[in-house]
Amino acid sequence: MTATTPKTLTLEPNLTDPDGFYAELLALHEGLSREESEALNARLVLVLANHIGDRDVLRAALTAVKPG
Image 1 (tube, rainbow, N blue to C red):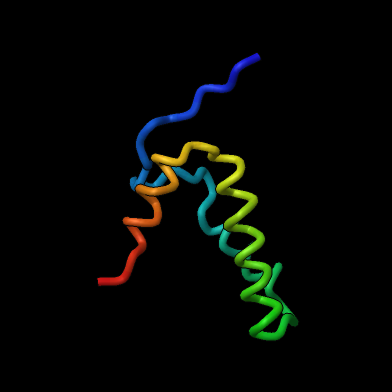
Image 2 (cartoon, rainbow, N blue to C red; image 1 turned 180 degrees about the vertical axis):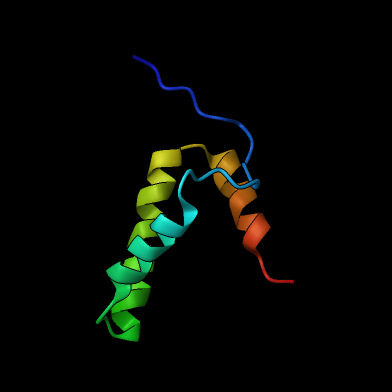
C-alpha cells in the first residue's frame, strides 16, 4: 500500500476542531517547566515531520515560519 502525500503546504485552516486541538495541546503542557515544554514541542515537531515525510513540504513549512 502506498500513501500519497500532498506536494504543497496547506496554510488555510484545515483542522475540524482547532479549538479542541489547542485545548489538548495546552493541557499536554500543563505543569511542565519551560525546558520540559520546549522538549515536548521539539518531539511533537519531529513526530509530525516524520508523518508528513515530504522534504519539499517540510521545507515550505520552515520557510513559512521563518522570522523576518
